[in-house]
Length: 405
Length: 78
Image 1 (cartoon, chains in turn green, yellow):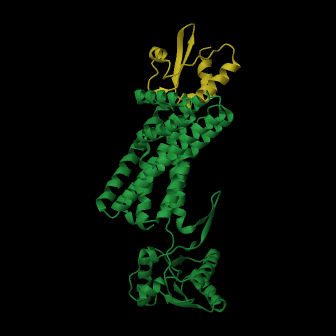
Image 2 (image 1 turned 90 degrees about the horizontal axis):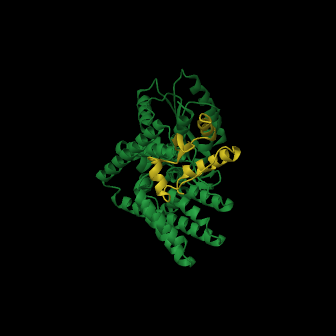
Image 3 (image 1 turned 180 degrees about the vertical axis):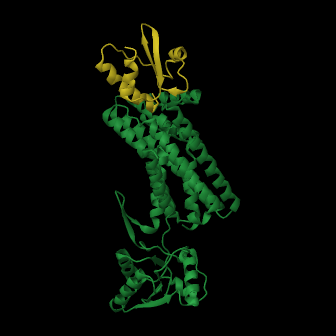
């Protein structure tokens, strides 16, 4: 595997975790009492070690109740163990197997000791679902009853640069950043910004240069934002329709494959450059921009630039529609609140525009046009294709992963 | 100028030319210098770099190349 492929694979894993890493749900249970369900075998040395550790906890935490099940000597214990493993999706896991609330801890190590302490503290202070109690009572255990060790509702994760983010928002938040960035390096609409920058250099008035450039970037961002909001709302209204899900999954798979094939073809050519397409349309747009930039009055010029930004982003929408469309569908399936989806889409668009902002600011500050190599566009196509394929496969075959997290 | 690869290659070529007085850089804009575009027929990938000596074309290459690769190509014909 080449270094680039390894980097791409690592990024995909991060993206997949960011999008699909399940977060917690909390429900009511007995106040302050924490039940520990310990499944073990007499002959297992790790079980013995864990059992001894649990003994010490009984004096430290008077509110805990330890239920011990030897799974080799009792048919009933073995059957319960099987049911528990099945509920947690750990049918092949062995002992020691400890369940606290909605969390299963498999094996025993120093880390397990820390985890047990954390969970007891967490559940002593907060209400929770007792999954094994529900199994014993013959009640249905839903996927939202299963929790994960590290986080609980109300916890925050400290992300680099961004700061504290509520843990139940992290997956969608990180997905907005990563997919927005990958989408942003797609060079579809970059050409127009570069062309505008070269024309702005011809202007003597520094304020005018900045005003026109910012107007272009802001309008592009707002247009993209509104398009994504519209897609989200359409997605929300059809989220429960099965054939729509299949259609979106098919769209993701087809676009994903198309991007991958395009990447492979361009990689085979060993030639990175700008593809000459839609020559007459591009020349017409360039002519309009020249006229707008040359306007004497700044206000009609800004208005003209804004209209051009809308037109160009609209024309180039087909080129980069895949990722924003799929991201808004994920938001729709997660049924996030109005404030949340507006925020996530804002984050997406900000990171989508960040390369454009960097090119513009660097060019204006140095008065030398700066460009990002088309190689990044190629990599963006590859990453975008893989992300679309992953989302397509999940939507088609494992929709629960996306819908329920 | 709208093509990122053209901007990057322009910077690299200017560096090479400024360091070698035997070289001269002439630039044609794909959208403005239509006659020259028709003369050289760039194909589907920009930028196109054509090395000429005495009006005779020696070599041409398209897309982004590193400074080292450009110098290597030019060096073969000097």
